[in-house]
Image 1 (cartoon, rainbow over the protein chains, first blue to last red):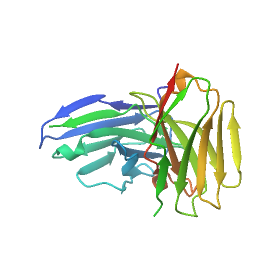
Image 2: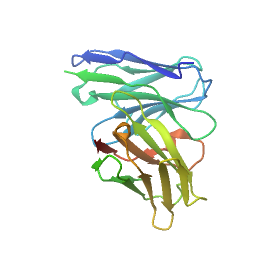
Image 3: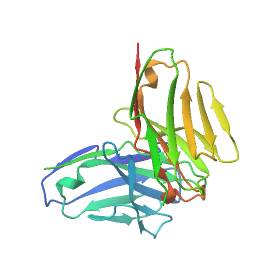
Image 4: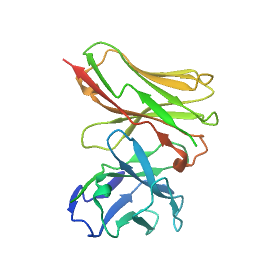
Amino acid sequence: NAGVTQTPKFQVLKTGQSMTLQCAQDMNHNSMYWYRQDPGMGLRLIYYSASEGTTDKGEVPNGYNVSRLNKREFSLRLESAAPSQTSVYFCATVPTGDTQYFGPGTRLTVL
Amino acid sequence: GENVEQHPSTLSVQEGDSAVIKCTYSDSASNYFPWYKQELGKGPQLIIDIRSNVGEKKDQRIAVTLNKTAKHFSLHITETQPEDSAVYFCAASPGDNYGQNFVFGPGTRLSVLP
């Protein structure tokens, strides 16, 4: 039982490049979330998926797209990376209660 | 919308001393308040939470207190140990089972000095 897994762990991109961050969970949770974490700003919600087949914007969605591929997987895509997207990205899942379970994170640097 | 402030941003204590981190929130509709611990290179992990119908909750060396009138809640760690060194985040939520309504504080970096 791995919980929430994220790939890759680290990534360096040049401005304008694209990439997809992958998240998978084996806890059979309906809801999945993508956050970014920046120094002094806590965790900010980018996109979320309340259930398979649905996605919605969070607080900071600009520059990102998401896909809820199936119940297990929720990916985050940067179509044209910008230096402002340098951050640590976390995927999280929520069961029927309030507790959020976070993945280990992806550290992204955009040059 | 909800706004969560957290103080202090950094905290250093001697091993064995107590540490207190305080959060304030703005939305009176919030009624679920979790605390997360984030160790270096890892994702946040829930360590304790409290709901608005309770004023205090304890789990071994960790306790959380809630003052709904003043809209603040605090994390108390007693007998601190080096492994308590981490970043701690508070959050507030309406407790409606919708994780998208979570609002996180900016975090407190706790250092426990041996």
